Amino acid sequence: MIRVWDPLVRAFHWSLALSFAIAWLSAEGWEDLHDWVGYAAGALVLARVAWGFLGAPYARFAQFVCSPRTVIAYLKAIATASEARFVGHNPAGGAMIVALLIAMAATATTGWMLTLDAFWGSSWAQKLHSLVAHSLLLLVLAHLAGVALASLRHRENLVRAMIFGDKRAPEAGDVALSQEAGPSGS
Ligand code: HEM
Ligand code: HEM
Image (tube, rainbow, N blue to C red):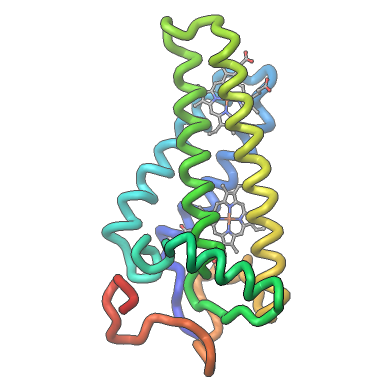
């Protein structure tokens, strides 16, 4: 086993998932709680973005954000059950992470807008917040499906890895950072 997810990534992940769940459940009728967990989600995204540039090698965006071409090629490989196992995030997972972070930031921002005088009682601003929040929910569901699929295909428990930080060491054909590799993964 090797250490892949550092403590900050793991703490970030489960705090974000919890904030999202509480924000969703408190949306109707628990306004104060809803606002605070929504702000917490926004702050977590900001911290993760900074960590994506400064953090441990597997946490860096340069390590898992790929071009659309690479993402599409990986999705095609999934369709033919020939995709490589990645020790870090795979290209499709990397694209999903970017989408989740952007959608979470957009949800928190449009929620905050509802507290401003400028948007007080504005029905389009409420609709916008509702729309981005529901889009985020769809992304979260797709994220869970992706995690389940990758766990089955590569016979590893990715949820456990996101809790404890360790994953199976790379085997022939797997994609991993070498011990000496820099954060760019080169
Ligand atoms: C509910 C809202 C959730 C959000 C917004 C979310 C978001 C994210 C993000 C941003 C990452 C990237 C982690 C990083 O590098 O910092 C990630 C990874 C991951 N998430 Fe979630 N997540 C959510 C829920 C869950 C749940 C409920 C599970 C499991 C039951 C889960 C399992 C995972 C796993 C296993 C990874 C690592 C994927 C990999 O191995 O590449 N997530 N998630
Ligand atoms: C990022 C996490 C957040 C999520 C997942 C989220 C989700 C939601 C959802 C699902 C609704 C119900 C929308 C509907 O009626 O269809 C809602 C409503 C609302 N949210 Fe959020 N929200 C978040 C962040 C925030 C923040 C940061 C604020 C403000 C500080 C906020 C303020 C509000 C308000 C005032 C409403 C009621 C709008 C209305 O009157 O219809 N939200 N939110």
